[in-house]
Image 1 (tube, helix red, strand yellow):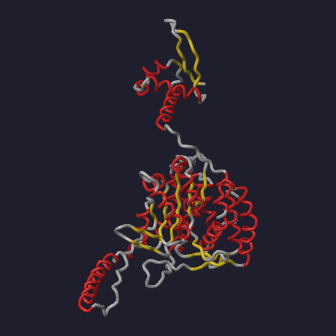
Image 2 (image 1 turned 90 degrees about the vertical axis):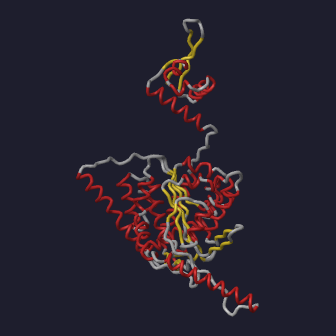
Image 3 (image 1 turned 60 degrees about the vertical axis):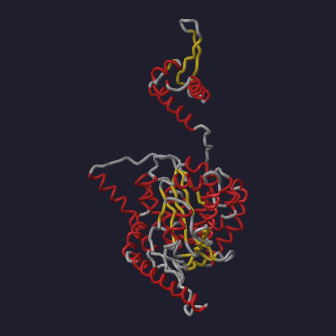
Length: 465
């Protein structure tokens, strides 16, 4: 385990180690996954006093990029058990709220009629303006599809939501971020998500509806492949808006999966190892199950407790701002917007760790652990590897498949020979066939030699390098 995780709460370290023992999960996935779940449990209950900049949310936007076959869904399901249990436990408590809403809606409609009648008859109403009932409460705390309307519609009827998925390609490649004919939808969604991270009011204004939501909490934990988010991260618009700089991004290389043992002893060992996550799940469930503090007479508006830093935490925070963040301006020169937010990321992580330990105060130990994690995330951002999307993805796929066939058959021969043996290749035009072979020769995957055939024509012979 990465030494920078040594100061984390024991239950978090145990969970990270268990993920490694179960699935050989790399640190760059295991730690953000554990931190993201802890943040989901903590963010509705707590904010943090930054001293310098006032009270701030502790919501985190975490994105993990990893190759295919890295068991994204498996790891996601392993760590999210406590949140799933909490969501299931909420259903009985809200089961009758839909009926409450329908009844109150009828009373509201009657009150409206009385109010209008008094205005019409007397020019003034003796009763107060009728107030519509609170929407029926929901408990869909985790949603994976990200449209602005979808997020807002969920927050009308509950105080917090986590954008979370082990297959987040649909979120970043969906219609909302693609924008159709222009970028208006993408700009609107990214600006709104930036505002949600900042704890600002959430607005929706259309010809049919004007909506203002205050005091909600939103966080993000997405696992996805690099190529899925590549276009998004390479688009300067999202950096200029500040959305990308509010993300904590980690990137994993491929690691081998653990050896599968489905014998009776092997299954017993598997369950024994998995039981190492139970204490983590119990803590998550205990943390999230605390009664939510809500503003009186306001629909689903949070009134979180405020975490304050002790003297030790203040000292670490001060040193971080004066030393680490200052250095970040140079080390992270390619990510300047991220570097100037290092301090706020630090506070949010420290608040999450304090809340996870059920502490009402952020201590120096919490802040030191958060500083170590920020060193990890800063390193990840510096080393972030993003490819460039090919202009011709179909051509690239065709070249890969052609090369695979040549390798599988250890083939050596002419383009015409390949055309007669490989059906899909034969259906291409001669120009398309020549382009594919030329691409593989240029890439150093194939060798091309010339020869003279029996009819005295010069032919090209292709073979593996």
